[in-house]
Amino acid sequence: MANLMQASVMQGIGRTEFVDRVIRTGLCPGGNVRMSRLLKLIEHGCVDPSPLTTHQFDFQDVGKALHMMETKEDCMLKPLIRFSAS
Image (cartoon, rainbow, N blue to C red; front, top):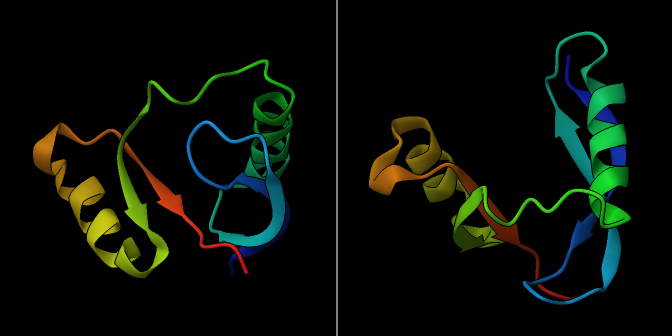
């Protein structure tokens, strides 16, 4: 069963605006706690994930992003998924 967690997700590159989103994950036991800690480090500027985000996709293209990540197409490390402002 997927874990449910609240997270602040950056809206676009180079912007400091954060919006609460629900992220469903299938992490191992304790993974939710580690992910929450990591997101807080990112939010406070202690960790810069940008070197890992080699590709960017709009939310409607998330299927393509996941496929490319799984197949390591175009040397992808991690995709950045952009959510449009509501």
